[in-house]
Image (cartoon, rainbow, N blue to C red; front, side, top):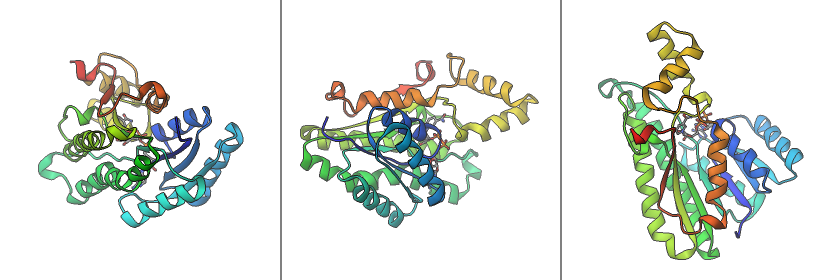
Length: 259
Ligand SMILES: NC(=O)c1ccc[n+]([C@@H]2O[C@H](COP(=O)([O-])OP(=O)(O)OC[C@H]3O[C@@H](n4cnc5c(N)ncnc54)[C@H](O)[C@@H]3O)[C@@H](O)[C@H]2O)c1
Protein backbone atom coordinates (compact mmCIF):
# COMPACT_ATOMS: atom_id res chain seq x y z
CA UNK A 1 0.00 0.00 0.00
CA UNK A 2 1.48 3.33 -1.08
CA UNK A 3 -0.85 5.98 0.19
CA UNK A 4 -2.58 6.76 3.46
CA UNK A 5 -4.49 9.75 2.09
CA UNK A 6 -8.17 9.25 1.34
CA UNK A 7 -10.78 11.57 -0.14
CA UNK A 8 -14.35 10.45 0.63
CA UNK A 9 -17.11 12.49 -1.00
CA UNK A 10 -20.37 12.81 0.93
CA UNK A 11 -18.78 11.77 4.20
CA UNK A 12 -20.86 13.70 6.74
CA UNK A 13 -23.54 11.03 7.01
CA UNK A 14 -24.44 7.40 6.37
CA UNK A 15 -22.06 5.18 4.40
CA UNK A 16 -19.45 7.94 3.87
CA UNK A 17 -19.22 8.78 7.57
CA UNK A 18 -19.14 5.11 8.60
CA UNK A 19 -16.34 4.54 6.06
CA UNK A 20 -14.42 7.53 7.43
CA UNK A 21 -14.60 6.01 10.91
CA UNK A 22 -13.52 2.54 9.70
CA UNK A 23 -10.54 3.97 7.78
CA UNK A 24 -9.54 6.44 10.52
CA UNK A 25 -9.48 3.45 12.87
CA UNK A 26 -6.89 1.87 10.54
CA UNK A 27 -4.71 5.02 10.49
CA UNK A 28 -5.77 6.59 7.18
CA UNK A 29 -5.79 10.38 6.80
CA UNK A 30 -9.07 11.79 5.56
CA UNK A 31 -10.52 14.62 3.54
CA UNK A 32 -14.21 14.77 4.35
CA UNK A 33 -16.85 16.47 2.23
CA UNK A 34 -20.52 17.28 2.28
CA UNK A 35 -23.02 20.10 2.16
CA UNK A 36 -22.76 20.95 5.87
CA UNK A 37 -21.23 24.28 6.95
CA UNK A 38 -17.48 24.61 7.43
CA UNK A 39 -17.86 24.75 11.22
CA UNK A 40 -20.02 21.58 11.37
CA UNK A 41 -17.64 19.70 9.07
CA UNK A 42 -14.54 20.96 10.88
CA UNK A 43 -15.86 19.73 14.20
CA UNK A 44 -16.55 16.31 12.64
CA UNK A 45 -12.97 16.21 11.29
CA UNK A 46 -11.51 17.37 14.62
CA UNK A 47 -13.50 14.66 16.41
CA UNK A 48 -11.95 11.97 14.15
CA UNK A 49 -8.47 13.47 14.68
CA UNK A 50 -8.89 13.35 18.46
CA UNK A 51 -10.42 9.86 18.51
CA UNK A 52 -8.07 8.15 16.07
CA UNK A 53 -4.91 10.31 15.95
CA UNK A 54 -5.06 10.72 12.16
CA UNK A 55 -5.10 13.87 10.02
CA UNK A 56 -8.63 14.83 9.03
CA UNK A 57 -9.98 17.91 7.27
CA UNK A 58 -13.32 18.97 5.83
CA UNK A 59 -14.32 20.88 2.71
CA UNK A 60 -17.90 21.99 2.09
CA UNK A 61 -18.51 21.53 -1.63
CA UNK A 62 -21.64 20.91 -3.66
CA UNK A 63 -20.47 18.30 -6.16
CA UNK A 64 -23.09 19.25 -8.71
CA UNK A 65 -20.90 22.34 -9.21
CA UNK A 66 -17.61 21.55 -10.97
CA UNK A 67 -15.84 24.64 -9.59
CA UNK A 68 -16.68 23.58 -6.04
CA UNK A 69 -15.62 20.01 -6.83
CA UNK A 70 -12.24 21.26 -8.07
CA UNK A 71 -11.83 23.33 -4.89
CA UNK A 72 -12.47 20.15 -2.86
CA UNK A 73 -9.66 18.36 -4.69
CA UNK A 74 -7.31 21.34 -4.23
CA UNK A 75 -8.18 21.41 -0.51
CA UNK A 76 -7.58 17.65 -0.19
CA UNK A 77 -4.12 17.89 -1.79
CA UNK A 78 -3.19 20.98 0.23
CA UNK A 79 -4.29 19.46 3.55
CA UNK A 80 -3.05 15.89 3.10
CA UNK A 81 -0.69 15.76 0.09
CA UNK A 82 -1.20 13.42 -2.88
CA UNK A 83 -4.49 11.50 -2.73
CA UNK A 84 -3.96 7.80 -3.40
CA UNK A 85 -7.43 6.61 -2.44
CA UNK A 86 -10.64 8.10 -3.79
CA UNK A 87 -14.08 7.05 -2.56
CA UNK A 88 -16.89 8.51 -4.67
CA UNK A 89 -19.79 8.17 -2.29
CA UNK A 90 -21.91 11.35 -2.40
CA UNK A 91 -25.37 10.61 -3.70
CA UNK A 92 -29.02 11.59 -3.59
CA UNK A 93 -32.27 9.81 -4.40
CA UNK A 94 -35.63 10.91 -5.78
CA UNK A 95 -38.54 8.66 -6.73
CA UNK A 96 -41.17 9.40 -9.34
CA UNK A 97 -42.66 7.82 -12.43
CA UNK A 98 -40.68 8.48 -15.60
CA UNK A 99 -43.55 10.51 -17.08
CA UNK A 100 -43.59 12.86 -14.09
CA UNK A 101 -39.89 12.90 -13.23
CA UNK A 102 -38.89 16.55 -12.63
CA UNK A 103 -36.12 17.57 -15.02
CA UNK A 104 -34.21 19.40 -12.27
CA UNK A 105 -34.17 16.21 -10.16
CA UNK A 106 -32.90 14.21 -13.15
CA UNK A 107 -30.11 16.76 -13.71
CA UNK A 108 -29.14 16.85 -10.03
CA UNK A 109 -29.00 13.05 -9.69
CA UNK A 110 -26.92 12.64 -12.83
CA UNK A 111 -24.59 15.46 -11.72
CA UNK A 112 -24.04 14.25 -8.13
CA UNK A 113 -24.31 10.45 -8.49
CA UNK A 114 -22.46 10.12 -11.81
CA UNK A 115 -20.75 13.20 -13.27
CA UNK A 116 -19.01 14.08 -9.97
CA UNK A 117 -17.22 10.72 -10.07
CA UNK A 118 -16.12 11.38 -13.66
CA UNK A 119 -14.64 14.74 -12.60
CA UNK A 120 -12.87 13.47 -9.46
CA UNK A 121 -11.42 10.45 -11.33
CA UNK A 122 -10.30 12.62 -14.25
CA UNK A 123 -8.48 14.96 -11.81
CA UNK A 124 -6.93 12.41 -9.45
CA UNK A 125 -6.19 9.27 -11.47
CA UNK A 126 -3.27 10.60 -13.58
CA UNK A 127 -1.28 11.27 -10.36
CA UNK A 128 -2.12 7.75 -9.10
CA UNK A 129 -0.75 6.38 -12.38
CA UNK A 130 2.45 8.45 -12.00
CA UNK A 131 2.83 7.15 -8.44
CA UNK A 132 2.33 3.56 -9.65
CA UNK A 133 -0.43 2.93 -7.13
CA UNK A 134 -3.99 4.05 -6.50
CA UNK A 135 -7.43 2.94 -5.47
CA UNK A 136 -10.81 4.21 -6.62
CA UNK A 137 -13.95 2.89 -4.97
CA UNK A 138 -17.25 4.09 -6.40
CA UNK A 139 -20.36 3.58 -4.32
CA UNK A 140 -22.91 2.49 -6.89
CA UNK A 141 -25.92 0.47 -5.75
CA UNK A 142 -27.89 -2.64 -6.58
CA UNK A 143 -29.52 -0.11 -8.90
CA UNK A 144 -26.28 -0.14 -10.89
CA UNK A 145 -27.05 -3.79 -11.65
CA UNK A 146 -30.85 -4.08 -11.69
CA UNK A 147 -33.74 -1.62 -11.93
CA UNK A 148 -36.77 -0.66 -9.87
CA UNK A 149 -39.77 1.38 -10.99
CA UNK A 150 -39.81 5.08 -9.97
CA UNK A 151 -36.01 5.35 -9.99
CA UNK A 152 -35.18 6.38 -13.57
CA UNK A 153 -32.47 8.91 -12.76
CA UNK A 154 -30.95 6.92 -9.90
CA UNK A 155 -30.77 3.71 -11.97
CA UNK A 156 -29.38 5.57 -14.97
CA UNK A 157 -26.70 7.25 -12.82
CA UNK A 158 -25.72 4.07 -10.97
CA UNK A 159 -25.61 1.93 -14.14
CA UNK A 160 -23.51 4.72 -15.64
CA UNK A 161 -21.16 4.66 -12.66
CA UNK A 162 -20.65 0.91 -13.09
CA UNK A 163 -19.80 1.46 -16.78
CA UNK A 164 -17.49 4.41 -16.05
CA UNK A 165 -15.65 2.34 -13.44
CA UNK A 166 -15.09 -0.54 -15.88
CA UNK A 167 -13.58 1.81 -18.47
CA UNK A 168 -11.26 3.40 -15.88
CA UNK A 169 -10.28 -0.05 -14.58
CA UNK A 170 -9.23 -1.11 -18.09
CA UNK A 171 -7.30 2.09 -18.77
CA UNK A 172 -5.36 1.98 -15.47
CA UNK A 173 -4.93 -1.76 -14.76
CA UNK A 174 -1.28 -1.86 -15.84
CA UNK A 175 -0.30 1.07 -13.61
CA UNK A 176 -1.14 -0.38 -10.21
CA UNK A 177 -4.41 1.55 -10.00
CA UNK A 178 -7.64 -0.38 -9.35
CA UNK A 179 -11.21 0.85 -9.80
CA UNK A 180 -14.18 -0.97 -8.33
CA UNK A 181 -17.82 -0.37 -7.47
CA UNK A 182 -19.63 -1.48 -4.37
CA UNK A 183 -23.32 -2.08 -4.94
CA UNK A 184 -25.20 -1.86 -1.64
CA UNK A 185 -28.79 -2.90 -1.09
CA UNK A 186 -30.99 -1.40 1.69
CA UNK A 187 -28.45 0.20 4.04
CA UNK A 188 -29.33 1.91 7.31
CA UNK A 189 -28.84 5.60 6.45
CA UNK A 190 -31.02 8.73 6.22
CA UNK A 191 -31.29 8.45 2.39
CA UNK A 192 -34.00 5.78 2.85
CA UNK A 193 -36.21 7.71 5.28
CA UNK A 194 -38.37 9.24 2.57
CA UNK A 195 -39.06 5.83 1.02
CA UNK A 196 -39.89 4.34 4.46
CA UNK A 197 -42.27 7.24 5.17
CA UNK A 198 -43.99 6.79 1.80
CA UNK A 199 -44.36 3.04 2.37
CA UNK A 200 -45.74 3.67 5.88
CA UNK A 201 -48.33 6.13 4.49
CA UNK A 202 -49.34 3.89 1.59
CA UNK A 203 -49.76 0.82 3.80
CA UNK A 204 -51.04 2.43 7.02
CA UNK A 205 -48.16 1.03 9.09
CA UNK A 206 -45.57 2.51 11.48
CA UNK A 207 -42.14 3.69 10.34
CA UNK A 208 -40.52 0.59 11.91
CA UNK A 209 -43.04 -1.73 10.21
CA UNK A 210 -42.42 0.08 6.93
CA UNK A 211 -38.70 -0.67 7.22
CA UNK A 212 -39.32 -4.40 7.48
CA UNK A 213 -42.03 -4.29 4.83
CA UNK A 214 -39.92 -2.46 2.27
CA UNK A 215 -36.86 -4.65 2.88
CA UNK A 216 -38.99 -7.73 2.22
CA UNK A 217 -40.10 -6.43 -1.17
CA UNK A 218 -36.55 -6.89 -2.47
CA UNK A 219 -34.30 -9.01 -0.27
CA UNK A 220 -34.37 -12.36 1.53
CA UNK A 221 -31.99 -10.97 4.22
CA UNK A 222 -34.44 -9.45 6.72
CA UNK A 223 -32.32 -6.59 8.11
CA UNK A 224 -30.99 -3.27 6.94
CA UNK A 225 -27.29 -3.51 6.09
CA UNK A 226 -25.01 -1.63 8.50
CA UNK A 227 -23.10 1.20 6.78
CA UNK A 228 -19.91 -0.02 8.51
CA UNK A 229 -20.15 -3.20 6.41
CA UNK A 230 -19.61 -1.07 3.32
CA UNK A 231 -16.68 0.67 5.05
CA UNK A 232 -15.07 -2.68 5.82
CA UNK A 233 -15.39 -3.78 2.18
CA UNK A 234 -13.67 -0.53 1.19
CA UNK A 235 -10.93 -1.27 3.72
CA UNK A 236 -10.40 -4.64 2.00
CA UNK A 237 -10.46 -3.19 -1.54
CA UNK A 238 -7.72 -0.69 -0.69
CA UNK A 239 -5.54 -3.37 0.91
CA UNK A 240 -2.74 -5.24 -0.86
CA UNK A 241 -4.91 -8.38 -0.77
CA UNK A 242 -7.14 -6.74 -3.41
CA UNK A 243 -4.35 -5.88 -5.89
CA UNK A 244 -5.95 -8.03 -8.62
CA UNK A 245 -9.55 -6.95 -8.07
CA UNK A 246 -10.41 -4.29 -10.62
CA UNK A 247 -13.40 -3.47 -12.78
CA UNK A 248 -15.62 -5.38 -10.36
CA UNK A 249 -19.06 -4.39 -9.09
CA UNK A 250 -19.49 -6.08 -5.75
CA UNK A 251 -23.01 -6.39 -4.32
CA UNK A 252 -23.50 -6.12 -0.54
CA UNK A 253 -27.22 -6.50 -0.88
CA UNK A 254 -28.69 -9.22 1.34
CA UNK A 255 -29.38 -11.37 -1.71
CA UNK A 256 -31.31 -8.71 -3.70
CA UNK A 257 -29.51 -9.48 -6.99
CA UNK A 258 -29.64 -13.25 -6.44
CA UNK A 259 -33.41 -13.33 -6.83
N1 LIG B 1 -28.49 3.72 1.99
C1 LIG B 1 -28.74 2.86 1.01
O1 LIG B 1 -29.64 2.02 1.11
C2 LIG B 1 -27.90 2.89 -0.25
C3 LIG B 1 -27.99 1.80 -1.12
C4 LIG B 1 -27.23 1.80 -2.27
C5 LIG B 1 -26.39 2.85 -2.55
N2 LIG B 1 -26.32 3.90 -1.70
C6 LIG B 1 -25.42 4.99 -2.06
O2 LIG B 1 -24.52 5.25 -1.00
C7 LIG B 1 -24.08 6.61 -1.10
C8 LIG B 1 -24.18 7.25 0.27
O3 LIG B 1 -25.54 7.34 0.62
P1 LIG B 1 -26.08 7.20 2.11
O4 LIG B 1 -27.08 6.13 2.09
O5 LIG B 1 -24.95 7.14 3.06
O6 LIG B 1 -26.89 8.58 2.21
P2 LIG B 1 -26.81 9.83 3.20
O7 LIG B 1 -27.93 10.71 2.78
O8 LIG B 1 -26.71 9.38 4.61
O9 LIG B 1 -25.41 10.51 2.82
C9 LIG B 1 -25.22 11.19 1.61
C10 LIG B 1 -23.97 12.04 1.71
O10 LIG B 1 -23.80 12.72 0.44
C11 LIG B 1 -23.67 14.10 0.69
N3 LIG B 1 -24.20 14.87 -0.44
C12 LIG B 1 -25.47 14.89 -0.92
N4 LIG B 1 -25.56 15.75 -1.95
C13 LIG B 1 -24.33 16.29 -2.11
C14 LIG B 1 -23.76 17.25 -2.99
N5 LIG B 1 -24.52 17.88 -3.91
N6 LIG B 1 -22.46 17.55 -2.87
C15 LIG B 1 -21.69 16.96 -1.92
N7 LIG B 1 -22.16 16.03 -1.06
C16 LIG B 1 -23.47 15.72 -1.15
C17 LIG B 1 -24.43 14.40 1.98
O11 LIG B 1 -23.96 15.61 2.57
C18 LIG B 1 -24.06 13.14 2.78
O12 LIG B 1 -22.81 13.32 3.38
C19 LIG B 1 -24.94 7.27 -2.18
O13 LIG B 1 -24.21 7.35 -3.39
C20 LIG B 1 -26.11 6.32 -2.32
O14 LIG B 1 -26.69 6.38 -3.59
C21 LIG B 1 -27.04 3.94 -0.54
